[in-house]
Structure formats: C-alpha cells, structure tokens
Image (cartoon, rainbow, N blue to C red; front, top):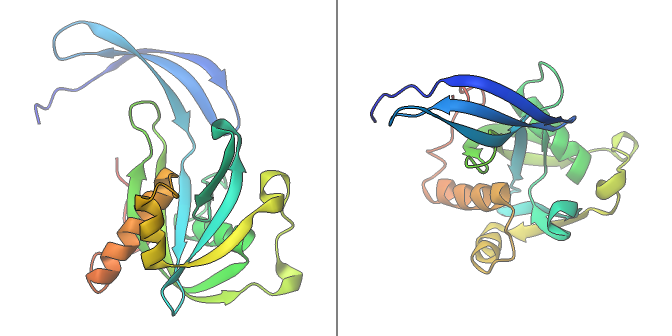
Length: 199
C-alpha cells in the first residue's frame, strides 16, 4: 500500500435517479496529473441467506430487465429507508419477498458488487430460526416482484448451482458460498450485525 491519496478535484453529475446517479469525477493520480472516472453512485443494498433447520436456503427467481431475463437470487433490497438498521432492512426484505421471519440474524459478508463501475455495497446477513409471516400480514407484491418464485434449496445444491452457472447474481453467489464455508467452520466466521461497514 503506497498511501497515495486520490483526491477528487471536481465532480459532474450526468444523471440522477431514485436508486443511483451517474457521475464523472476528476481524480488526482500517483503518476502526476488527474484522470476522469465515470461511475454509478448507489444507495447500497442488503441481502439475506435464510437457512432453515434442514440446511435449506431460500432462493427467489425474478425478472431483471438489465440482463433481459430471470435470475436466482437471495431476498435483497435497497438501503432506501432513512436511518433503518441494516439487519432490520434485510429482515424486512426477507418478509416482503419470501414471507419469512427470523429469530436469529448474524452478519455473514460484505461485498462491493462491481467496484470498477459503482460504489454499491451490499451487506449480507445469515437468518435462522425461521417462521412464516402470517397470511394477513404478508406483503402485496407488485411489478417484477408480483411473479417471484420462491424455492427452498439444500445449501449444498445451491453451491452446485453456483458452479454450474445457474446462480450468477453476485450477491447470491457470494452469500451462498460464504454460508457454506461458515457452516463448514461451525459458524465461527459470523460477525455481529452492528459491525461497522467497510469504508
């Protein structure tokens, strides 16, 4: 680590939306001078690996327009509720997308989804001691979520799906593999849910 501080000299916003903005930063470089860097500034996300007593994980299958098809994913969503605790947000997504509650939540892994083009971070939690959300309290799903398919998959089968190219969503790949490794280590790598997020 050289310790060079990359300073932002200027910033130009190209687009601003609800979820992300597109900016061009002029950044000082260690070789001298400065260079332009275009990237997405993202609100951030949370996700959850929900694991039942039989070591089955909940996967959801939904349409993603950017890739023009359906993907197997973890229950996940945006950090778009001001001041909401990240674990609480992940459990909200679990309830909304998979109709599940959790009695135990641990921090599993942090991920920069694609640092060459976005500052998006996703924090993935492990949820256990699961129970169904009562029917009267279930979320009314709309848009892409209206036809979500929810499937229980043995964790070892989900790992196989990753290596077979059947799970390609970055957060799902990382979450499934991290959960399998943490299980193999007796859950020792799990962290407290209030662990500070990476810089």
